Image (tube, rainbow, N blue to C red; front, side, top):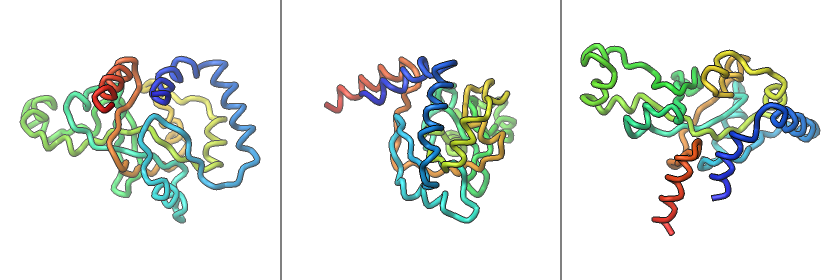
Length: 200
């Protein structure tokens, strides 16, 4: 429960001057480390870290490796607190959004609108992927990232990974090894608490 509470608390606390102090602190701490990938904590399940590190070790390796899961319901697809990721054919992130992307144009035209298309063709959900928010950074990318100011799309979507894409960082997206419950809002935290009662 501690990591779930941390996810909600962090979004309220880590802003403005506090954020700047934390970035400066970690930049100083990371300055003397070797160039091995860095696995940062998260409120999400951990995929095989070896898979993520192997992606970075490739000759055309990514600067950041992150994870995705399938979207299993229309409610999840339309939930702006659940971030969606679109990947190219090689598995690299093209864009992250709080909106349902990619847009299924042909299905929407067939049925009049995307909502109706999803109702009539539920297999369309397989087109969408939710970003699970776990990252592994190359050290140099993380140090650079801390010095870049927020970009316009990042501010509009409230998604910091768009800053990395705007600076040309290649982000590899791999499938998570298990499903997760994101704790991004107080409502998510209550849902998690209720589910943990059933497990205990």
